[in-house]
Image 1 (cartoon, helix red, strand yellow):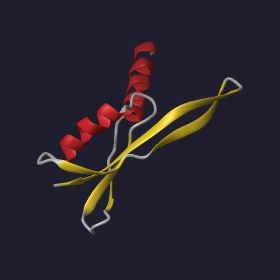
Image 2: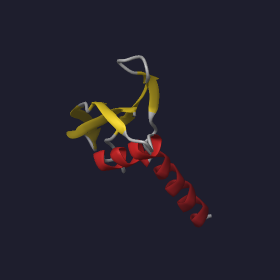
Image 3: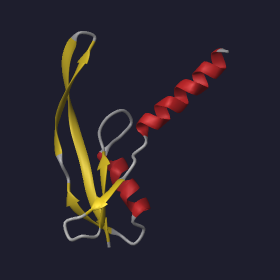
Length: 90
């Protein structure tokens, strides 16, 4: 039973860590992708890697939004960086 709970926990964390490109119509009318590059297990480097997978022939960076997000952790307000990547395939 302990092993089953551990496997379910790892699978749940893996789902949180994945970067899921969200397709939308870009500024020039062509398809573009928006990705969230912050949070548990996510990084800007991981977003660049995912961009390469989504656009094997290369991509243009449309935007790289960044900012700060606040969250509560054990009753204390914490701040963390929030990064994103918006790309359009070539």
